[in-house]
Length: 218
Image (cartoon, rainbow, N blue to C red; front, side, top):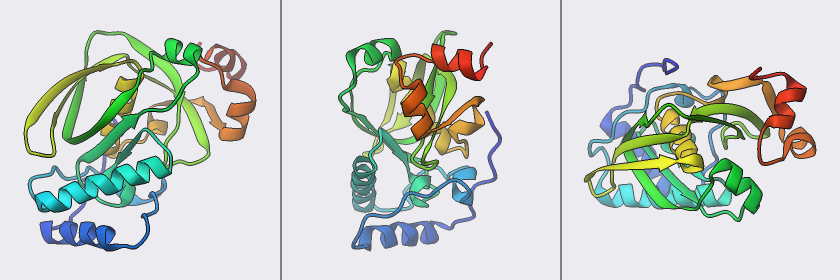
């Protein structure tokens, strides 16, 4: 794991004030972009810093921002909140061939608190991915094909669930955010592409064409 900076020195009162400011805004908040220190710090575990009602409102807000973006996941640090909370959902219509190659199946909405993942088996998969905090770019990341996620639900219950394929990729990407890790830290940098170049040249189910032309993962 890439080392993150120490947890943000937010007191519980400061964190709650930050959340309340977001919740009281009249418009949706902007997604924090790479270069902001909150994306490079270890987010603090949730242990009741905000009330159950505020937590529910924050989760609802994060889901709205994720849908508006649009994306398949959003972590609290991406809204400037250094809290170990993320939302996931993948209901996009995807080309059947691409879905089959990427093992991409619909993921119903899920809010995860204080998550940790571990690989299940040794299989990995390499595909292009992007991030709402690094707009305009995509790169290939090798990730575990299957992971076991341990987390808390919004009602405070401990949970454990196994994910595979694209769902496992989403889980890893969003959980990494909570530990100061961006996908570019793990990416094959020779694959790094602007969205226009990706769309023009590499938008295929797999990465074979890009791999040969750009010279990564020999």
